[in-house]
Length: 225
Ligand code: SAH
Ligand code: DHB
Ligand code: MG
Image (cartoon, rainbow, N blue to C red; front, side, top):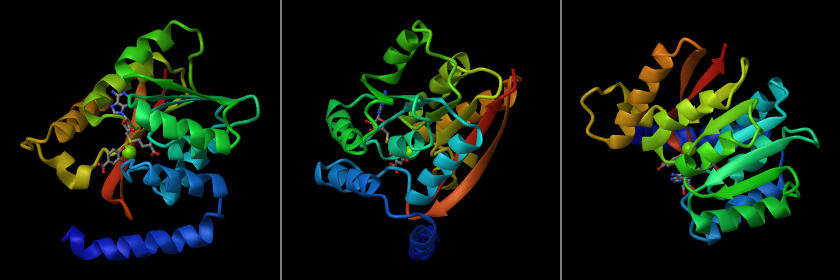
């Protein structure tokens, strides 16, 4: 069923992107060079990237944390919303991805605001927690999916009341509603939603999305204290 609709979702994404998303050479070059370097085409879409930018603008984010950089496409979107003295830390496990990301950030002129840390999130987060940089205003969780519940627990530790925690890929073509799914990523997202549901310190929702990347969605949580 999804396959029948995919062409239409892609056409609508292209229609919206053409009208609403001004050409941005640094973002376009980041995708081109990621592709040329053989990185998987799994960045957020332009319409989703702009949603991330909008959220960051809405809350006046000055400190952003991202888990999962890939070629820094979402990183550039988020960093574009920062003030000049803003700061973004992004974590990436793959040195190959990080190398492409660093070049893309350099070209975007954002290297002064962005710190790319190479390593596994669960190794780097405990270190970050000792550095006195937190709390972050916005945290984007988009790394390996099985660790999403743990990333969420770390995100809470690195938050303040009002922090926005956005998590990508939580719907998984609808499989998230399947309690019997054998897919480890689906099971992880279900554990993540259980955490969200029982955590009294956050209010959350999730939005199903369709578009050029198919059927998936975001969870959006605000820390209430
Ligand atoms: N946020 C990016 C897409 C990230 S794709 C964008 O939308 O443009 C997920 C990334 O997480 C991949 O680059 C992958 O290498 C990285 N990753 C996988 N396991 C990780 C881990 N344990 N810690 C940090 N990053 C990880
Ligand atoms: C995939 C998509 C993502 O947005 C991501 O962060 C990781 C993987 C995927 O479609 O495989
Ligand atoms: Mg993602």
